[in-house]
Structures are given as structure tokens and as C-alpha cells.
Image (cartoon, rainbow, N blue to C red; front, top):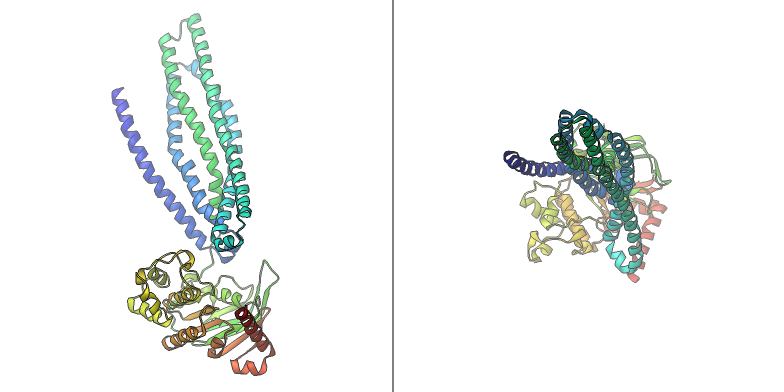
Length: 518
């Protein structure tokens, strides 16, 4: 007994220590696998699914699987082995008494099966409610500026309170079912031991067998069996509650990633892009592009202009394969865009948005997101082009200065210049500017564009802009309306011949004047 007790303690310690290590590595791998698989999903996946739901599956569901499945499985297996061993020994001690003992098993099977289904169904609701709470929190925190300006915290408080209450109610239901499962064992198994004593005592008094020593040994083993059965039932209930999370994770893992070819665009020195009879239909609206034809040659500076919702940004998204065309084709150097490796394809593009996202990190790390292998000379070059050098030199920690969430410690112009530097650090073959200089004053804008032309004189630039500085630098301007090209030419040509171009530019300039007056 002494040897068994000491051995049990040692092996129990080792097994638990090993399991903690294994379970944490498992959860790390699972979370990374889910995260990387989600990143490979088509752009429409992120349109259809809220950020909160995606976050909930990566964090809450993976954690739930680890806590209620991975951490329990060893104990379930241990309890199951103990049940098998004890039952085998009980059969050896007294076959008849053991038959009476296991007569209660069908009751447990029926009850456990019923509870398993109930716990699984309500756990699915709990997982969904957790996702809704996460979405509400994420939505509120990410738009905290607007929330504070509106200054009506009661709306957001009531919204979160409603979602949290629904989550709490569902969690209570699951907990009740687990308690019922555990209480079921205590309320049936423990009183059932009395039945064993009654039958054993009756047979002893009547037939002289089994002996009192056998009955005592039997009852002692039965006392070992009861906790094993109770632990097994509790483990099964925990596993049942994690099935919903497993299903939610599996649902995401079952989605097919973006299609990708094998050709490498990065190895080609120059690129020529052709949109040939391209048509695209937006699923969530009546917007469409029909029979679009456009050619972009190496070294072109092309600017696209048009009213809001005319399809300017959609053309860029088709080029980046965030969307795929419904008909027609996009050719790069005469090869269909789908034949290129999708990650390699995007690596040759530089993209600067109007509202550029800046990460909560140091300035140097924000730059290196564009090119992890960039040298200090290359960094200095793009900093000079984007006119950021003087700003960085004034900072106490220079390049190591930490930028707060979403670049909140930077002005609009500083964020855009940092985004420009980050994009240029990629040494792109095609640079896409989507209203990327809208936060810059005219002098800074002209300085940045001139610097870009001097250093990247052979880089193809595709710009979405209505500012005169950009329009006059473009060698071709595309006028788009409702997904169709209605005019194209140089600034001077369109100024003379296109009433639609003049109307668009006039409206944009009038809006800016009104904004300044206000």
C-alpha cells in the first residue's frame, strides 16, 4: 500500500505536469491554425462575418475547447480505465453482486444521452452569445471617438447589458444541466450501495456466502468505483459543452481558402496590366461593372476620377484579387491574374489608403511591415521621400517611438506620410494611391509626389484622386461612371472636351471650399 500510494503520487504529478505542457502547445497550434486559415479566406468572408465573431472563434472557442475538452480527456480516460479495472475485479470477487451493481448502468446511459444533447444544444447558444458580446465590445471600443462625442452611454450600456444577460441566462442553463448530471450520480449511485448490502446480507444469512469479508471488500471497491463514475459523468458533461465550440471552429476550417496559381510575378522586371471586357456584380447592392477595358503600361501614372460609388475602389480590389471578376479577364503580361501565386502577386503592389491603418507599435516596426528585410539606407530613402525625416528627428525616441492605437498620437498628415513610406519600402512595381494625399497640405503633397517621381521614375502609379496636383502629374486620367469608363485622356484634353470630367472636378472643389468656409 505504501509503494502504491507513493507511486500514484509521483505518476499523478508527472502526468499533470506533462499534460499542462501538451495542452498549452495544442491550444497554441489550434489558435495559430485557425488564425492563419482565416487570413487565407477571400475578402467576401470578412464582409459577411463580423470582426467580433471572428475574434470570438479564435479566442473564446479555442479556449473553451482547451478547458472543457483537452483538459478533461485525460481524466475521462483515467476514470474509464479505473471503472473497467474495478468492475473486472468485482466480477472476480462476486459475479452475482456485480450483476446487480451494473443493473443501474442503462439508467445512466439514458440520462447521460439526454443531458449530452441538451448541454450541446445550449452550449451552441452560449458560444453564439459570447460572439455577440465580443462583437458589441469590439464595435464600441473601435469607434470610441464617436461614442464619446455622442455622449449617450446609456444606449451602448443597454445594448451590452441585453447581450450580456442573454449570455448569462444561457450559461446558467448549461451549468444547471451539469449540476443535474453530477447530482444524478450522487442521488442514484450512493443510495444504490444500500441495495448491494441488502442482497449481500440476504445471501449471507440464507446461504452463508459471500462471506462478510467479501462483502466488505466488495463495498470498498464499490466506494472506489463511485468517484470514478462521478468523474466520468462530469467529464462527459464538460466535453458536451465544448462540442459547440469544436463545431464553430470546424465550420471556419471547412471554408476553402483563396484560389492561387503558381506563377511568380515578382521575378518579372516590368508589368503590363490589361482589363479585358471585365464585368463584376456586387452581391450586397445593385452596383456592377460591365465590359470594362483598361490598359496600364509600365511607368504609367494613371488617375481614376468619378463620383462616390462609381466603382473606382472596386477596380483596385479586382486588381488585388480581393474580388474576382464574374466575366472577362485581367491579364498581367498576357497571363491571367489567377495563374499567379496570390501572395506573390500582392507583394509587388504598394497600397496607400485614404484612412491608412497604423499599428500600435514603434515607428520602425510600422515601416518594416512593408519590408522586413529593408536596410537602413532604404528606410532613410523612403523617409526622405515621404517628408518624415524632420518629424522623426524631433521625437525623443526617434524611430523607436511607440505609436498609440490606430495612430491616435499622429496627425492625419503624419499618418498618411508614414503609410506612404511603408508602401514605398516594398519597392512596388505598381503603386496604388487611394486618396492617399488627402490629409496633406498642397505644398507637402507636391513635395512627396516630386520625390516619388525622382526616385521611382519607372514605377507604375494608379491613383484615385481629384486634387489638381495629382491630376496634372498623371499622363492619363480615367473618368468612370457607374462602373463604366466614359472618358480618358490627359488633364488638358479632358478639361477641353469632357463636360463630365469638369462637372466632377468642380463639385469636388466646391465641396472643399464649403468645408474650408465652415
